[in-house]
Length: 104
Image (tube, rainbow, N blue to C red; front, side, top):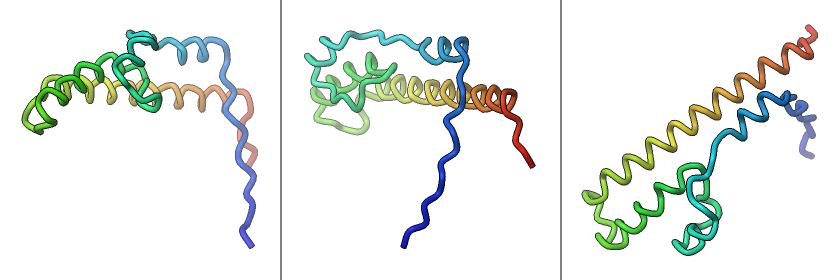
């Protein structure tokens, strides 16, 4: 039988960290994303760059050597968003360790 493992508690985020986490802003509305046909799974803080990239791919029949500027801008945004989330996770972990030191 499978062994059940208790998951560690979710890190406690104080209000300032929560405000920073929510600091990202969508630069495109839900209506515009609906109109552009962007799947909900791709709706993040970089979705405003995905719309022109998808349009370019449609016009150029997704040729890999086309739309390089749009693709690079989108991928750069995704990378920067990833780095922001990593920093927030590190800050949350430090905050949690301050509140409840690990018992050894």
